[in-house]
Length: 255
Image 1 (spheres, one colour):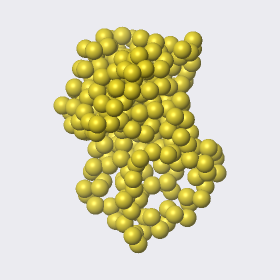
Image 2 (cartoon, one colour):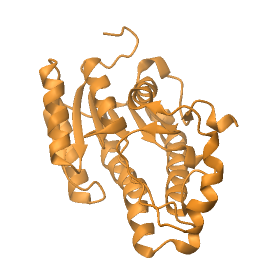
Image 3 (cartoon, one colour):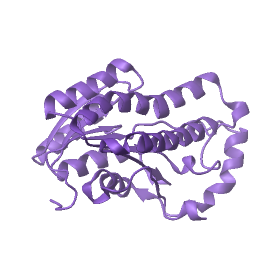
């Protein structure tokens, strides 16, 4: 185990942990000796990750449900606290894509669902976790923003707005709670190999425009590369890093 992460024995919540970046993140925290609460909408995926952690000698629990619902948020935090004795790290990773829709093509349903999952759920989880972190006088929050939080050419209107807002929420948390021992940072993944599917409407304005910018993506990341950045930001090695939106994008944001 690393001598610099300071994660051994810590209680960690990872959302969207049943697959992709979330799964890789949960496994990395468990390998560092943390106890991990695996939260996901997919019961099969969440339970599989818990089994994988336990098979390697780690400690994990699963909570299944829609994280945009307050009752599920409450269950996630309560389970972590009761099972692991507190809550030290919150990784708000769960998210969904939009249809790459331009604003004029975005339905109420698409807008509301993307905002609810990508922005409101992290807010609800953070609000529920904060009392426990404040009582302990320490805590680390790591959000998954996106390349779309840095520019307007990486996704549709709903996703872009949601991820810009995640970046703003992260910075607000960093300012509001830095004197309370709580740090908040985010990664901004570029192209990453995961199971997220994009349901693009043929002939729509959004996908037609965005397609011309996708040549700058470069080599897609492996989910483990994104997870390594999340673990670093949560670790003692990043003890004076607060309010950062860290691109993990093979230089896409520099183009």
